[in-house]
Length: 256
Image (tube, rainbow, N blue to C red; front, side, top):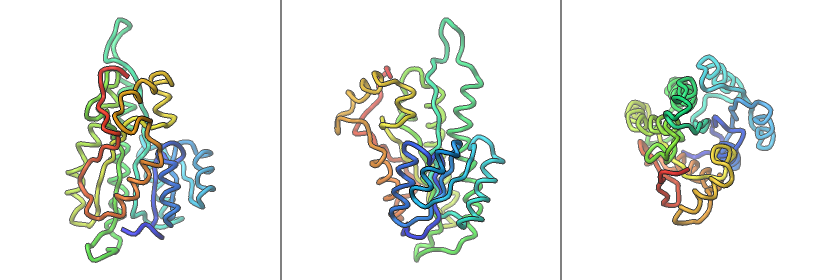
């Protein structure tokens, strides 16, 4: 798909991986809607790229539905949807102080997994009514974000790993569900990227220890690296139903 002039949605678009994805899509000529819980920060990014800022809580289906309706009214139906919004919590399933709080587990799953599914189900329902773009019959593409934690999560990350493994697991069946309509579904699984979320969970010392385990390049991922891959997926129609690790050949150990 040619990105130019297409309507694109980026959830979690106000910071980190999402913000650079917004910038990359806009640089290629997309009309970008920045969806985020933090409306003020979303407005800052949207103003930078000439896009639209919309507040959304991806864990609240009514909020998602309202946000998508706003995008449709202001920009048109999105053909490109990037589900980048996510949260994390570092907690062992139990310790001497007691078990992992169930409400925090559910919150992570509701944002990372259920929120991603909800955006996909609602946005794809609008997308199937669009005319095909090309001879392949392509109508749109979803790029969801999981994590390498969904494959080999370290100690203390059961909730986050479970939510991201769910995103990985729904990639292929969702792609197969939407294939008759010419809609693709891909998932990116980042390793350790230099973002506020990553450093907020690990602290600088933990972040540095993780970077030491990356074979090459010996650094944290730059959000621009992620954004380049996200744009390539949109542009390469043969990419469908797959999960791509972007981690410098890193494999998680027990410690975070």
